[in-house]
Image 1 (spheres, one colour):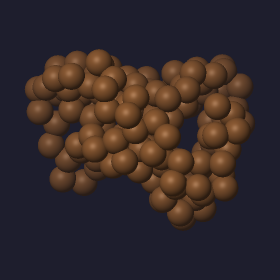
Image 2 (image 1 turned 90 degrees about the vertical axis):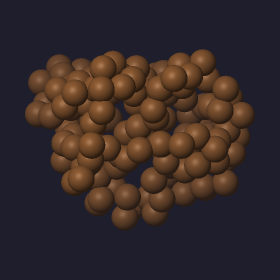
Image 3 (image 1 turned 90 degrees about the horizontal axis):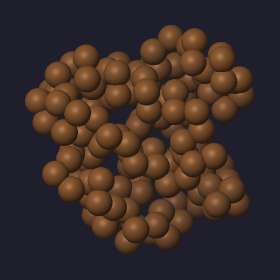
Image 4 (image 1 turned 45 degrees about the horizontal axis):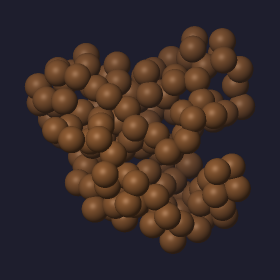
Length: 140
């Protein structure tokens, strides 16, 4: 998985999004929930050339709503657990985002400490989401 993720994210091999499309499409946690991709900061998107999580959802044919924006380009992967947990909120609502009182599922590629998902879920819950679950491809 480490090799796959490196090739997908850092070597910009967008075609690899199809590798997990079938598994994602049938993930039970998606049933009855609206998918929300965990977004990249615009600086990171410019570096990587495509939004990896959104590409996974598109290839799997899973409809999604981009409700969040990343507020910092800081790389959590280079921080220790305590630093990550103490960091400021990483997300805000996207402009014109409308949070309904429904069930959402955050979708991300990698779960390390859970900080990213915790911050994203906090924004959705604070804005009126009924519940927020999470789906990731990899757990470190």
